[in-house]
Amino acid sequence: CMQHYLTMLGSTVLIPALLVPSMGGDAHDHARVIQTIFFVSGINTLLQTTIGDRLPIVQGGSFSFLTPAFNIIALVKATMTFDSEHDRFIYTMRELQGSIIGASFLAIIVGYTGLMGALMQFISPVVVAPTVAMVGLSLYSVGFSGVAACLEQGLLSIFFVVLFSQYLKAVQIPLPAFLRRKPSSAALASSAPESATAATHTEAHVPGAENLGSSGDPRSGAAAGSVQGQGKQEEGIRLFELFPVLLSIAVTWALCGILTAAGAYDNTSPGRQAACRADAVQDMLEESPWFYVPYPLQWGMPIFKVSSIVTMAAGALAAMIESTGDYYACARMCGAPVPPPYIISRGIGAEGLGCLMSGLFGTGNGTTSYAENIGAIGITKVGSRRVVQTGAVLMLILAVLGKLGALFGGIPNAILSGLFCCMFGLIAAVGISNLQFTDLNSNRNLFIVGFSIYMGLSVPQYFNSYTATNGIPPINTSSQQFNAPVCWSPCSARLSWTTLYPAPARSGA
Image (cartoon, rainbow, N blue to C red; front, side):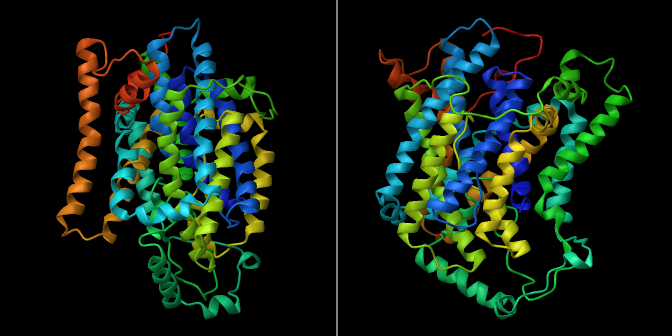
């Protein structure tokens, strides 16, 4: 049952790795946020599988919320001063909490009023493709600039992700005979052609819906996995296909530890040591408590600002589109009927409750359905809701282990940056892949997609260059509530690595 959570572990770790340093948090804040996001993931999964769509689907953080979060982080850093970076982290986290709580009511209202079912007719692949592609493209500035800080580790991280996910994905690790499961009579009856018929049936109800299952996240490597091999006895597990990110972190981190122990970075600059050395995790493990239970409002009372809530609502909308497709994909993998509109609405409403929990606990991020566990269902053929719920309970137990959060919080930045290059690039490609369900000979479709992507890149560039030249954004009215979401959203889309992650020697707000 923990297999479902292990498949999403690598992606979940990346979200705090991006957010916490840019907010001014230290290594201990990073560890606590990792624990919190794991803990809330367990709670939200129980909510979704109990009162939501009741499909065996895991809930976790979403990359769709990152750009709105960076907007808020950049605005706080540019307009306010603090006595210390930790104070800036606490204040920014509280404002993120308020914005996520406010945006959660959008999903709750859209879900439980049934609006999501009515909106499905407007969510076509032409809409999804540029929306999702821009989620990945807007984060390109935090990729290779971080790899360059420690080139050998960053490139190794990229190499192993490509190796595991593309070249070794079909390799099966042998299992002992007593762990091999023989196919059931139902599995023998449901062959690949029948599964293809089910997929076509899903498309007939919601055009391109199953394609949305991988729309908002890179966590779709196996989510589109077919049901090949049904009816055959499993002799092994596709370890590399299930855990490419996690294995890449483990192997590259081990090599990083060897280089550190050999003294390869002893005589390098402080900046390079901070990016490359692997021994920082030792101090974190020694100083972190064995147990820490995340609790609501652990960072303080949320700060509610209209501008921040409006900004975060954009991420909530993208996450809703992403999750809608995941519901169809999960139902198809499990052999369940096509989810009717009221099930979709109920699932979106439950995700709204999940975002509310994320805001109360302070993860710095919202929640969405994870495509990794859908892929795990396709590979393992285990689609039981009870299995996912048991995994959620185990996730709650593991999340209180302070040492576990400290371990993941000590991953070198260069390794994470290599993963960013792969993951965010895949987000953009997955978004564009939705165009296979459209008429690309239509001038209207081509114009919508091309104009949306180009303007999504060009407008932020204009806002950045204008602000850098004149010191103020191009739209500067007397209303800060209006200026913030309009002006800082484009600017934050092009934040540089040095802006988000200042050099270790620098301090202050």
